[in-house]
Image (tube, rainbow, N blue to C red; front, side):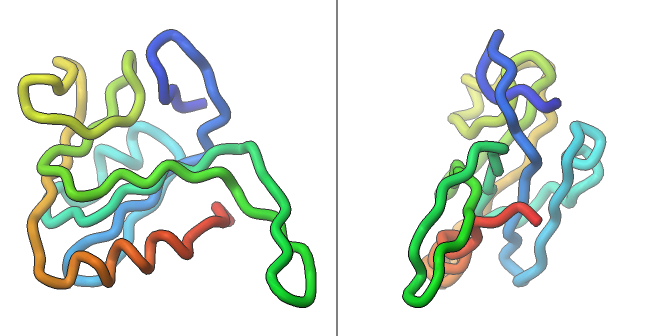
Length: 120
C-alpha cells in the first residue's frame, strides 16, 4: 500500500496524472509513478479507498475520496513521505519528481480532473 502521510498507512488506491497534451498516466505502485512521464504535469489525483455515496439526479453513485494537487512546479512521491507537491527546497531527498508546466488552458484540466472521482 502506498503511503500518503509520513508515518501513517492510509488506503491509497493509486494516482492519476493529467498532462498538458491531454494524456493521462495512472498507477498503483511507486514503480508506476517512476515510469510515468515527468514533464508537463497539470494535475495529480490521489485516490483513497474510502468512499462516499452521492445522489446524481436519479440514483446514488459511489465515489472515492480524492486529493487533487495542481498549479505546482513539482509533484513527487517519496517512499518515506508519500505523495506531495511543494517548492524545490521542500522535496524529500528520496522523492521521484514530476514537473508541472503553466498552460493557458489550465482550467480545462482542472475542471476535467474535478469530475474524476472513481478509481476504477
